[in-house]
Amino acid sequence: MSGWVLGLVLMGWVCLAGPGGAVAGELEHSPAQWRTLGKGLSFCQVEMLRDEEVAGSLAVVRIDPASNAFRVFHHAPQNIDVWQREVKAPVVFNASYYGRDDRPVGAVLVDGRLVGPARNPQMRGMFVAEPQGLSPDLPRATILDLTSTRVSVQKLPWFQGVQSFPLLLDAKGRIRVHKSDKTAHRTVIATDYSGNILVFNTYRGAFTLHEFAQFLQDSDFEVEVALNLDGGTEAQLLIKTKDVEFSSPLSWEKQLGSLWDSRELRLPTVVAVFPR
Image: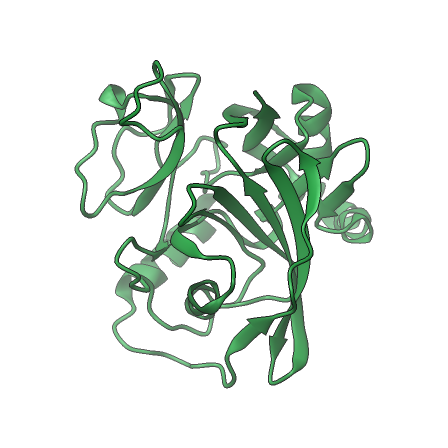
């Protein structure tokens, strides 16, 4: 999400003081049937249900950081399928918000190099990965709560990182976003209680941040901490292995989108997953 649109969205989230318009009916999901993409890497698609009716579709990637590495890439915007062909990763997904100059509005670490501002107080969480060395005290990938931990980005021991907003669920199990009426496609990155990284992408259906946070809290995915990434047309996920291919937005949506503004589907920053 870029330019003045991002500013309006962030101001709206920050200024929320009340519950807003609640959506009737809690979200549930159909059983997850995991497909293996590689060692410590699996994928499933579930239907999101409200009052036993399908409200949307969700893709989930489960990543064991012991067997898979993360890298952040940033340069001139391009379509996610072009990114995948360039970096040759089995899994690629969108990062966080960016401005009209295509630079991130929160700190991003690309192989240890800072891109974007060193500090933006609106950022509430940071996905970090690939620590220097193999210290047993440092997880290979995790999510930092920036409201409870003061972070100097230049001194972080991880080489890869993406700041974003808002934190949907924190380590104490609290939902950290107010209710609102704003719905959109979503990409969310999370940790689970087994130390895996989970990437969620709603490739059908649009949801508020609060109801999606509630959904994750109540789901069978054992989510511990969840951080919202960019949403709307920028909420993208691509999987390409020998046996499995998946793209969000769906291919027909990409073709339709290219008819009016293909730039909206281009991403300046992505996160890629590689086997170790």
